[in-house]
Amino acid sequence: MADQSTDTTTPRAAITRRRLLGTAGATGLALGAAGGAAGYAAAPAEKSAPLTSLGADRVMFHGKHQPGITDALQARGHLVAFDLAAGAGRKEAAALLRRWSTTAERLMAGEPAAHDDTDVARDAGPSSLTITFGFGHSFFSHTGLENQRPDALDPLPDFSSDHLDKSRSEGDLWVQIGANDALVAFHALRAIQRDAGGAARLRWQMNGFNRSPGATAHPMTARNLMGQIDGTRNPKPSDADFDQRVFVPASGDPAWMANGSYAVVRRIRMLLDDWEKLSLKAQEEVIGRRKSDGAPLSGGTETTEMDLEKTDADGKLVVPINAHARITRPDQNGGAAMLRRPFSYHDGFDADGTPDAGLLFICWQADPLRGFVTVQRKLDRGDALSQYIRHEASGLFAVPGGAAKGEYVGQRLLEG
Figure 1 (cartoon, rainbow, N blue to C red):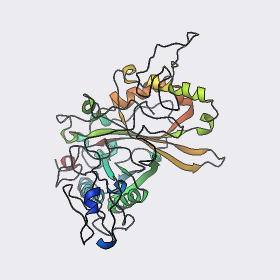
Figure 2: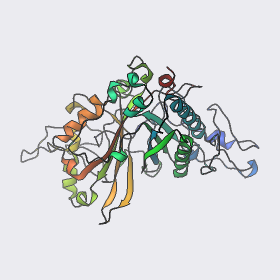
Figure 3: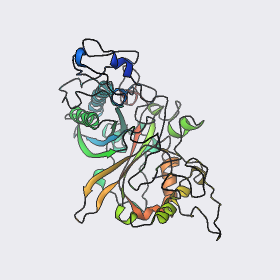
């Protein structure tokens, strides 16, 4: 839960087709410069109405980078990991990634799956759907590609806050799904699962959510289930070193990871019963920021630079030495930074009524050792927030660059 913003804007942000959808012809299918379908079961033209911008927004599947990394947070998300089936190898993995890529391209355009579509999203547009694919450490041994496994994919070290459930961690293949409509997101999840067929079996799956677009009077950084504005210092695409921090360079090693990124995925339970017993002042001192607007305790607004040396009348540091926001600052970690793109989750209650809720933490970086591991080691040594959270599942995945038109994700690895 590093202090980095989740409110990202990007050159590959969702493309609105509101005007195109509003001029659909008698077929109920609108095509335009974006080249996408306008919802695959539109009503007859005389009864049709344009989709709202929420449903019409589309993210492109093909590009330099995979979708779902720099795109704005979506209201609904699913994370799912698969293991290759016994006997499945490189050939079966290639066929699976080809199927998945075809399905992702169609669904992100608002079209039905190519075969046996379930009709769950029949009335909806793309709704900013993104589908992202990655490879886990074990994938390479199961496909005979150990010599292509990146050094950056070495297993994460153990941390003191880890209480990891191995059955809900790691995996050969990882898929991230996000959309601004819950049915569109579930439709994609179901299509991906059905496409797996006999090539791969489900290992684990997690569901998440964020605030819906338009729910606040103006765009703002997301809040987490602790009520805190979560992620003020996220790197932005406009930063001069953004690509260097987030993406593997085009000349990177191995070559198939060019323009890709590494995703660290953590299921972090928030111990909300304990957290909510704290006073507002105590909560703010744990984080180092005001709960109301995310401004640092040293003063200003959310984006004001934190004054780490400021003291009160008694000579006490205004931002405590163990405050989460102080510890996670890039300038306190050798410049380490990661692009956070999480979802909140709530999976019911334990037998004693304790909520099973928290954060599906997802962060992106060019090198996880210099990104997540550096920051988490620092947090491990004295973060005030650590007594109110528990890391319960973990995964690290190599996410290759985007597929060019006519390619599938991972083709350069599997056919190189």
